[in-house]
Length: 269
Length: 345
Image (cartoon, one colour):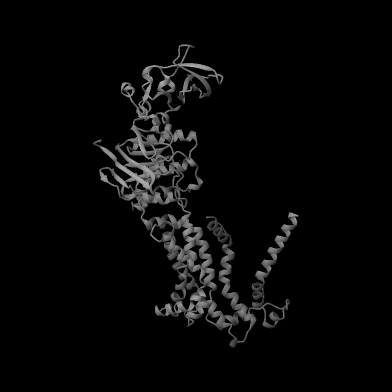
C-alpha cells in the first residue's frame, strides 16, 4: 500500500516537473529550428543557429545584459545595506515603538508593488532619477521581506556571542560586522538568490521607468524586440528568450547544491 | 574597607520590573585573589558577575574596579576579560581568530598579535589547533580556547561564569587545577561563578555565598566551613552538609534553636552511652570512607563518616557521641551564635 502511494507521489512530482519545464523545453527546441519546423512540431527537422544570429543583430543585447546585471547588482547591494541595518535594529536594538514600526514594515508585504507604480513613478521623477538604473532599483531596496528575513537570522544568533564581542571591545557596528553578518551568511545567500532572480525577471516597473536603450534591462528589451511590428517569429523570439535567461539558468545549475543548502540552513533557523 | 581593594561593590542592587535580582551587594576584593560567587540557581551570582562585567547596569550602588568608578561604564572600558558558560566562541572563526578577536578589535599590531597568540595557545596547550573551527573541537578544547581568549588580552581581571559546567566530572577536576594555576602564574584577579561548592571551596581564596539575591557570608573556604554564619551556609557548604539538630533534643543546649554537627565530628558510641539514638537510613560507600545516613526525629541530615567499607542494615539503631566544642549553635532566625546564655534568656 505504502509502495503504491509512493509511486503515485513520484508520478505526481514527475508530472508537475514536466508541465513546469515544457515551455522552456519548447522554447529551447524552437530556438534551434526554423519557424515553420517549430510551429509544425517537425521533430526530425535540422538544427540551426540562424535564429540566434538574427536575434543578436536585432537589438543591443550586450547593453541590455549589462543594464540587467548593473540593475540586479545595485538592487542587491542596496537591499543588503538596508535590510542588514533594519534587521539588526529590529532584532537586537531596544528602542521605543520597535514592535509597531516592525509591524508597519511587515504591512508592506500586503501591498502589491503594482499598486504603487504611479506613486513610485512620481517619486522617482521628482528625485530626477527617471530613466536611470538607480531609479529602476530604488523602490525595491527597502524590502520588507528582506528585513524580516534578516531580523529572524539575527535573532537566531546566541546572545553570548554578542556579549563576548562587547566585552572584547566591539561597538554596535563592530558586533554587526564581525559577528552577525558572518553568522547570517546562509540567509544572505538565500536572499540574494531570490532577489537576483526576481529582479532579473522583473518587467513592468522597468518598462515604465526606462525610456532608452542605455538603461533598458533585458526583459524590456526582449519585449520590444518581440513587439508585433517586427512580425511574430516564434523561433527568433525563443532564441532571444533563451539568451536572456541563460546566464541565470546556468548559474543556478552550477550552484544548485549551494543554493539548496543555503535555503535549508536559512530555513532551519 | 580594605585599602588595596581592587574590585569594590558598594550597596549594588539590580531588579527586573519588581522581580528580585540582587540586593545590597557590598564586596571588597583584593588584587590577585580568586573569588568564587557561590549559591544555588537563581541566587543572583550570575547577575552579580554581569553587573561587574557591565553587560547589565546596576540600579543602585557603585562599582569600582582598580580605583576607577565604572558603575555606568561599557564592558570594554572596564579592562576585564570574560569566560562564558557556553564559551561563546565565534563559530565562523578559527581557533586563532577567536583568540585574537579582541586584539584585532583593539587594533593591536599584527606582529604583537602573533606573539600573544602563540603564548596564549602555549599556555593552554592548544598549539597546532590554530586553524580548526570551534565545531571541530571537543568540549574541553573549546573550554581552553575560551580561556586562551580571556588571557590573551592580558587584562588584570577575569570573570568566569560557570566555565566548567559543560565538562564531564573527570575533566572538570583537571581543568580546575589548570585554572587555579593560570590565575596564580598570571597574577590576575579572578571572579568565578559556580553552583558547585566543591569547585568554590577547592579553588577560591574567598568564597561569597549568596541566596535570594543577597550575600550570606563572605570569607575563606575554611571560615565558611568551620564558622558558618547561618543555617543556610551550614547546609550548603560541605559534603555531606552540616546536620541540624533541634536544641531541645540535646540536654544542656536547650537555649540554642538549632545545633549544627559535621559528619566528621560524630563518633559511634556504645549502647547506652551515646547522646543521640538514631536509625540508619542509608550507607554511601565512597572508597576510603562510608557516609552512613541517620534519622532522628529532631534532626535533619545527620550523617556519620566511618572509615573504609561499612555495611549496616537499614533501620538498625545506632548511638552517636560528639564533643561539645564541635557543635555549632544557631538562634531562632538561623544566625550563628556563640553565646548560648544570650539566646537562652
